[in-house]
Length: 467
Image 1: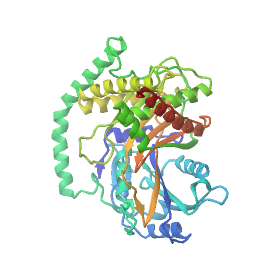
Image 2: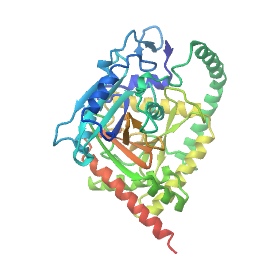
Image 3: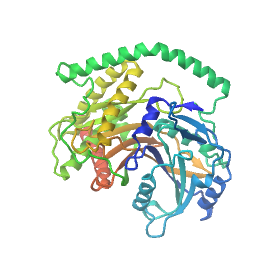
Image 4: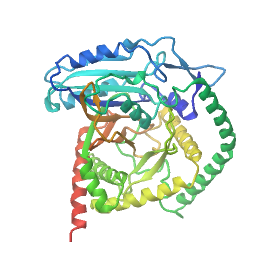
């Protein structure tokens, strides 16, 4: 049995039928040469034979009136309740149909009486996805792991070459933070107790320092130390009361193109990606009759782990970041966003991680109370949308010789945000995963605008560096 952190507990407190708190991933594969049409069906059958389920995939949440909630090992895990097979019908098996099908799988809450995860094998891909493909959709509760951890676990269950044909399902692997021996867990517990005692004062000092920064920002004595929560741009269709329906879409840009822009402008991947998103969101909102005069404010998760740390659970903070003031010049937009992100990074580095974590819990609690009271349509949101960046494997991965062509993140929606965007780099591509309520009009169009915004930035960078 192990206790939950406050942040992990928060995902259970915040969870509702309209706003479930699980994260997912869509993996699209091409069947290996000379394989039969039964490849995916056989894969599903083999998966069901791997009945040894290791932590955290064998853990059930336990609530008690006398103690903090905790994880407990399930006596047994029935894989038939966690691993499923589907086949898309001919004529409705292209990319759009796959995305719509996965969005429906992503809607319902996970059953808390069982371990909180599912894997779906989806066969019969065709149309614009090409014949001979299949997909895996997997989801797990956010209290199990954050996006960075989930991506790492997924990669650990796949092979690095097509010649490695042994199956290693993700639920059979020993994952860092959960598969330690009892002795090591006890040692970690003792260390964490001493660390907690020593870090309490640092946490209060850090929160005080962060509060002072926010105060200076609010009275305009500093600029872009950190964007203030709940004062984002005027109400837009991107925010409001989160409802149950979901839709999913993507955009993709090759890393070669991204790196050319980065090298010419001395920018980071985040700078480039957020510049594209800023331009795309403004164009999308303009289509809906909304012209913003202030910068778009995003919520941005930041990884609070130390370098090399591979603990499970969640260790992230969420801060608010202003993007660019309105401009028609993509190059100027890139420079504005770079300036804003550098100032935010300076702020993050000046306070202890515990302060960012406390700030995240406090602001998240306020937003969650507003959502629970059905006030998200009237009160200002923490930001216009949430954008996270999850680094993925740099090389192609394989499953029984089947090459994974694409790897898409599918996240959860924070309070008052009808859209969540996750950047994910895999092999030679940068994917933009867009998850939204089905109330947001034509999400697919936003993905198209992201790709168009990158082309505009690319052209502007060439012009800016022309002799």
